Image (cartoon, rainbow, N blue to C red):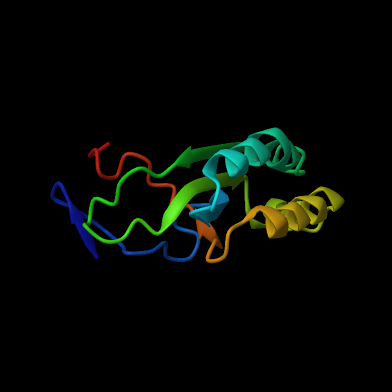
Length: 130
């Protein structure tokens, strides 16, 4: 259990207690040999391909600039692709647009880059006490 501002929350959703959750694909890119060339390809070619994914609600990306925990800064850039639910993400990942995007990722992503699926808890404002 997590305790925040005198409220106790389960560490994970229980059943459908929080309803249908949005899901996102999180991509962590390791450091490229040539950051300028990586960013040109990423913004001019790769992200326009990402925007064509069926079911995509929102895409966010940013460059990681500091590791606050004092550890190695293992990753250069992060991308977060939001879908309304797992079914929509699965459909998007089965599309021809995804096949093209995934092929480009294989060419673009430096060794050690990773992809994860995150199911959002739907507890917006949890830490803010909302």
